[in-house]
Length: 118
Length: 118
Image 1 (cartoon, each protein chain N blue to C red):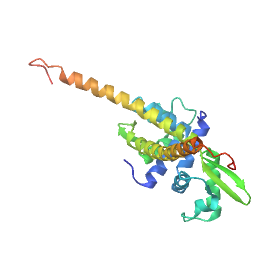
Image 2 (cartoon, rainbow over the protein chains, first blue to last red):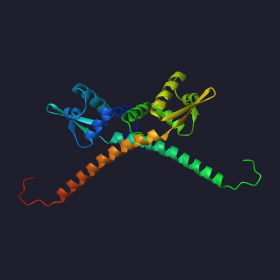
Image 3 (cartoon, chains in turn purple, red):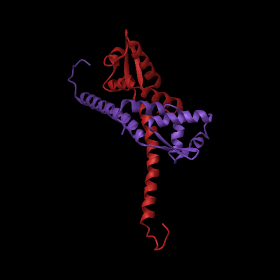
Image 4 (spheres, rainbow over the protein chains, first blue to last red):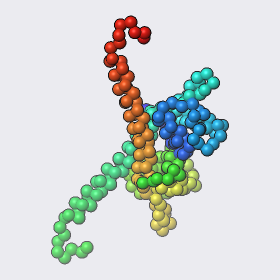
């Protein structure tokens, strides 16, 4: 798991670009070369390389040179960390909202005395 | 839910800064004014305002002017969307890895004939 603040910074930064998210979706189906990653994207090979470097810096993608080809593969660990960060915050807020809802339901259910000012 | 690619871009971009993530954690406990949000952060009020604008643009934070105070509150919907995007991709890859593991286990269990080339 990633524990450092800066690790999460780089993961969310990597996820903030639609082209990089498409690359991750492609890598979800299995490893691919850098040029394969760029095939369905409207960008130059140089731009693809730059995006791959951002993904590699975030830890979401691992690359390996095989002859003259750089192969890329997906690393799930940073995805788990990003997902966990979001889900923990969401769950925390939802618990507060649940308690608030419960409190409101209880106080609404309490019968008011006739003549009470509403 | 957010469906547009650009919405997810801005949500992940907003989450990519540690100061903005701290602001979201603070807002998870309830609404706060812009100056309250900046209290525990080592930055100027002008910087806090800029971060709040990024959070507001992503939809993660809603703001409302009450007199001379701008109050901020957390909006969970973009968090759900970001979480869903990550969890769907992770689950997809994990299913592939599970099937691969199952395939490997099955092929490993198959007895090889004596004399087979390994």
